[in-house]
Amino acid sequence: MANPSPASSRVATELSHQDLELLKLLAGGLPLDAVARRMGKSERTVRRRVRGICDQLGVGTSIQAVAWAARRGLV
Image (cartoon, rainbow, N blue to C red; front, side, top):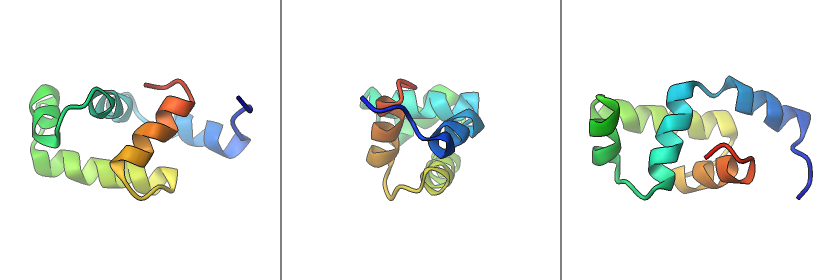
């Protein structure tokens, strides 16, 4: 596997602990409503945060965000 680029390493360090927890829960196959309950947040808040993570990572879907994090060993 190739080393992550400096830009992707920078983005990875900018993901918060909660962002990584959210991605781990999604990677585990939980639907958004279950993720929201586990995190003590509303589903709307979780949806907004997923969109923010996707925008930050430059991907279009939560699946792509989870794959991005998995390739870097974050989830």
